[in-house]
Image (cartoon, rainbow over all chains, first blue to last red; front, side, top):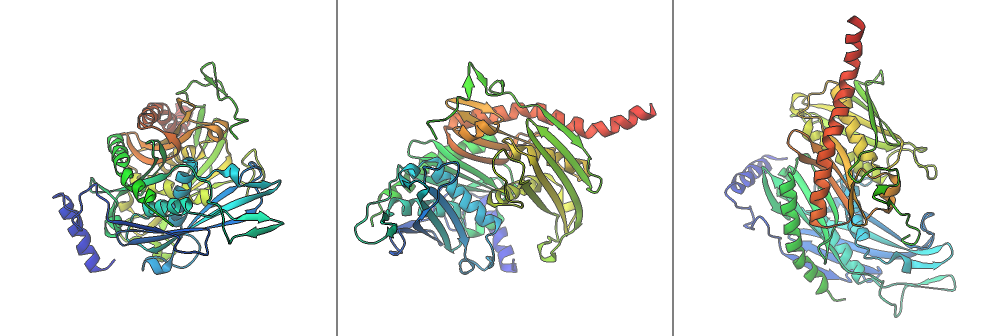
Length: 262
Length: 244
């Protein structure tokens, strides 16, 4: 951290006590959200999501695979996340960091718990199922990767084509049906800095926050996944109030998802 | 999977005969490994888990060191023979990497890290036999190992998971319940103020379910904390007995 960062961090903390965020947002306000689908036509599904300056691309490929031994008649869902070195000066090359693994697993849990994918419809024949690979590519980091990643993964899933399997061959081109999906899941992430709780923390807020909480919910306000992170704590009252905010703010996220067109 | 889902609650009792807010039997023994600065062993139901603490010692590699405080390196792993299923792979997989990360974050809050700048404190959690709830049992036993190592801490945290079976909220899911439950919510709590140190969840719950889960976890804390403290006292009580 350079001297300018140190001064900026002190400034952010100071103005938070007066109820002001550095970019002028309210505490419970998202940055502007842009989403588009089909950005990578070669992939079976894809979506790019910007939350402020955070930019995430999700790509989906669907391959013929063998089923998991405990679920012989269901297809597979595999979610990975890459914090690409081009996305931030703080990201290094090398195998996935614990942060990347946590990100992928939290997105995975939300999608799985909400049953967005009908894994039974991915069965082809004995010992052959479809595997749906969701790769989350972080292209520019400015905080709140959890919400941007879940949003891009779900956006891509809702606009993915289902390849055909004919005569031992995978057909990925031509007129193909849509991948079968049910409903939606979105997540809201909060950061806590010196006791102040903020929705959608940006990169500089994340660098000084003590605690993080991600809550994923569906359109019926069932909580589908939660993940607390970092060294700080939350009281039960704080968590309950963040659940209420999530129910409120997820409406906007779902309307982003339902407005998307291929 | 829905088709062959076993019945988890029969006549208000769970598969192992427990009530909804009843813990499995827990036994903890402190300082059982000679080389470690502190260690502890827990049997939580059929879970058998060892925890060992090394440090504070010089943080290596050097670039990981923090000149203002100790860094915490937790490593949660499951032995390849620990589950009833097939032979697992040794070393941490993606699940274990995530659990190690959130476990480190629990203890970053609780250890007086600023007392040991430039050092690291290693927490090794080895699951020898698993039967559901190993991350919670791992945090509970690691707390004891840290205290046994004489690491100064603000509190002695514990962890336990709550879950949902059908419409019923339950405490401390075992493996079968975990596999077929409708939600699993592991939590770690700081008993001095009830603050939440670890919170994960997947499945499907309402806001009210979450509040019920928290009160169940909170209530179980009295029992778990007592077992932790008794384990720490036990070696000294033996010495007192000897010289009485």
